[in-house]
Picture 1 (tube, rainbow, N blue to C red):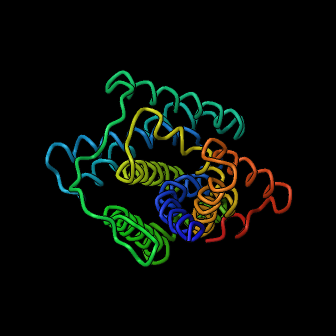
Picture 2 (cartoon, rainbow, N blue to C red):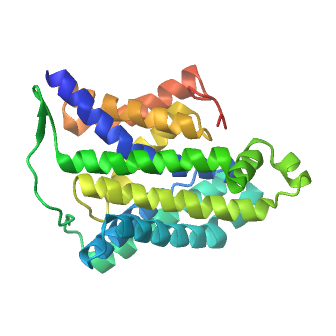
Length: 285
């Protein structure tokens, strides 16, 4: 039963991790560099949602606030610091994104301090399915994450903008010949991807608490999920998030929580060695 409980916990963690992982991998597919500033953007989104929720907005309004603040901030840093470096290659842009992530993290620290903060949500008793326990708050947060994932998949599959993003990710030169403006798609991918990362930070905060290191703590797991599923693949990011979530929870039973972060390193090394393109391949929408 302990293993089953760990698997359930892993499914919860994976569901919440999938939302920022989708944002990360979607940006990689279009912009062609790993944007590690998602650590700071996730923290910023978590605190934006926290302020909105504390100001009396309902859950939907708080999620919109987290999306908007994270999307605008992420896009601003992309335009000012990351995208100009793409001409020199993906590595300079990735290194710059680490720096901007640290800047955002410390801006949040200056504004809010280092103390953990929790969303003021009603306390409810856990739900038991036999010996398996899950809280109503976790079920609500999982439901929100799943709804967001469905909306993203629907947008990519059925909307004109989503199809343009897919075309630009698959073959930017051919997409440009078809009249798709790469600059506009890059701007949209940055805003939406960072918005999803901010919403993911808020969802993770709803499940526990938030502080200036909220995004930094999930960065390795987020990157591992994207690499495991296949960088640039949205379905792969979801699959990778679930696998990483369950692997991390199961590892706690074996080696303890202090080594939980090692799961991400192992997953990245194993996947890059055995299947560099990831489980679902590069840009496999």
